[in-house]
Image (spheres, rainbow, N blue to C red):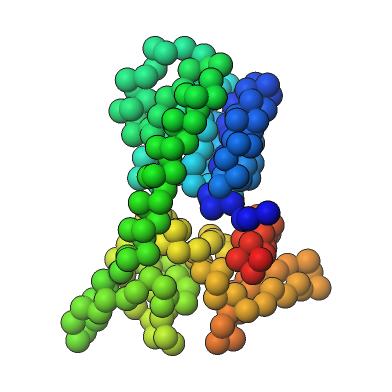
Length: 242
């Protein structure tokens, strides 16, 4: 079976609705459902841990609704969003929130298929754009253009990011959170709160006696993986190796 190209998160407080989206997505093997959420709080956590490419997001959920999820996360840091709702009164707000589409439940197979076509086109275009991406950093000798594929790891340094490439470090006045949205398409995953690592650069995963996890990178650099992110990080490395 071929590997899925994209990761989907399904968020709805109704189990039957989540199951319905899963069943509709089963016809599109290029998408893999990597998680389900019952409320907005779970969505905010899962976005960091699971790094989905798209979230099928119910508008009305207990506590934090779909619009509040986007407001807290900000549209720039969201994956593609397909809103789900039993009502059509929120359509204008959905597109103001930069959603890709707005589906009224129950969703027909034809309507869902049209959404998936649009979604796949956007994700492919985004992937093509990200492959060509470069990051420009300033040095005492002038600007240096770094190819994202040549970056070994990225660390946070207060309001700056420390980018390591070819054994050298470059300081960039940009937060790690902002950079994460730029490099996610290149396989970068959070190892812990202050470090992003390209999973293709992971040579080995070592378990510690205390139950921790260490990522050994090409070149021998060792990066500790936080307990919170250990499962998702290891899964990302396995997918890359497979």
